[in-house]
Image: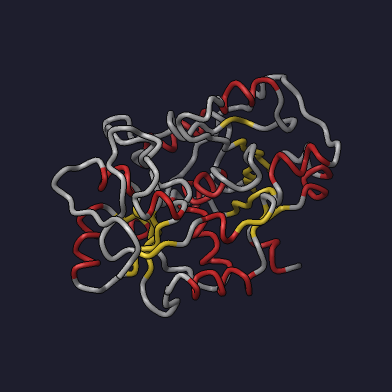
Length: 284
């Protein structure tokens, strides 16, 4: 077993196991607002045979006005059970960009109690580049009960982040691109202010990905060190709306940091509120 196999399945392995009854393939694609791409439409046109579509906007807390916030465990169980998924199966998640939204889906299944969740190494781009099959046929799986075991400690809210930063008890690591972190570029949602949470650190998720694939552990550790992150101290990941933050959570786990939290509301929540402080420009 190689190091990556704990978190990733190869395209070759998946091609050999497409028909295994206890393997579920999940298309977790999602695109940023304003990109003129619709993940569900793309899935309907071509997906890996047997894959079901997991819509992070639909499987969410519909009572929360913020985008794709975690649903209550019972709502998650109903949604994925209807897709034919239970917590005992091996779940293989991929997305259309290689490694973008799939880690968010990976993280969600994990904290909801799924026991064996991996990502497709290289995602759909690698699958297509190798000439492997796709289909537009709808995947229908018999419903299954999903027994949740929610890990609430893995999820941070605004109050926990605010208080943790004030007490210097956490390091908040923001996965957004540098121009957005500095407040030099607008947010994808026009009602969200530009800037960052005061005291946060910046490690763009792109720094730990090369050609849609997670870089080696040594490069991950170097990236966190360059960003000023102390791996021995508590870490909370953040981004625009809790999607790219999961890439950093995955990266941390791959280098042995398994107790990090993720700020679900992220900058969309903090920056969307006029009563929360922000910082712009280079760090002092």
